[in-house]
Image (cartoon, rainbow, N blue to C red; front, side):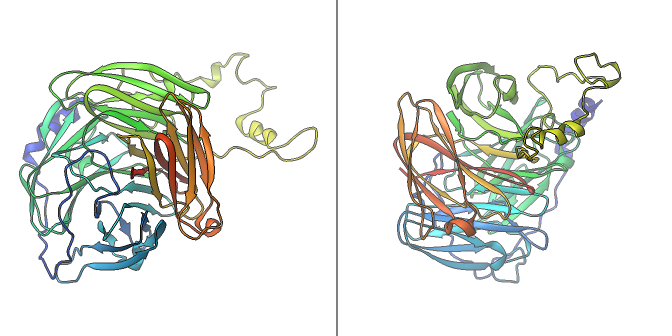
Length: 498
């Protein structure tokens, strides 16, 4: 029934239209020139575009900045009200340094995508956003492919999926958005040669446009001008957001899960021929090369439940003989439907349990939990492992590099932040992790064996006195950040600078 409804929804795409509000240009700030066309993130561009930021009565958010040199940074939030000025904040960074700026101090008015401009570099920007019930964050965008790919969309029951199109420039943009689903490629309702006015944004609830889909990829093609797209996925537990990307033959994911979350890998091939894809896992005990191989057919997005391949945690590299899009999504087991043809885990009928399951002498889950918190011999409580509930998503890194800037560390109250560093090479890497700016934390050197990763927990901002790290390695490595707390979970890619 759901497939029938989904087919009806997709067939009706062309008949639906989305309302738009044009915004008047009033004394616009200078957002600089459009960025060059590249695939991976780089610290060299002078402007970074952050499409999904909200700061209001229930949500707090931060723009996280880091720089190798002394820089002046300007954060500009275009105004949704055409009669009012944009919000602007000037920030001075002494390099190497890092700062996190409360978006609410610039504007606290709800949705506030922004632009971060640096007068020198290398310098980078990310965002983080949180409330009592959600936690998300993204690496801001500094490079623009000809065609954006947004992998990992899902509009199945229990999910809400939004598309954000942010035009940070004065000129209007004209774009076409297409959806690639199990039913093929279709224009997205209301987004065939749609105009996105300058210095404005459009937010669309895709769950209403194409409901009941387990898997969808979206392409955003600019006919004129530039937009920066992102997807925002919500369920009852958390929110995950991720920006559009280009395509690549290699994707690295230094972080794929935290305790309590099952990692899944989403792959999309928008080309005309099948892509031969290989998956390598990197565990604390060493690499597992070619743990899985697939032929990913054109226009058939695929989700792979990585826990079927090995026990998390692990890092992942995806290799392909043709350019593809790839995304990690993590959530509690059973959150994401299977699209890889493998059966769901069987449920145990408690009433028919055998002697190997529950008996009168076997403690219930609650009793077992109580017993595991106490040491019978000493009568002391045993600390239980922390398990997180939330949804996280992150595009991979396309290029391992020897130097990375990592801003936005320890800024979310009550959450645990970690840096994840993957050494995908066949040789041992010596990595120096240095705090940026005034800090109570000292630099340290870490040796990462070939084909392994390390997780480095980071103190909160109040304890460490800094909100960023500089990663220097003797060999190219790949870096990402996880933020996990009672609010939810977020994965954010690092930014390589050399």
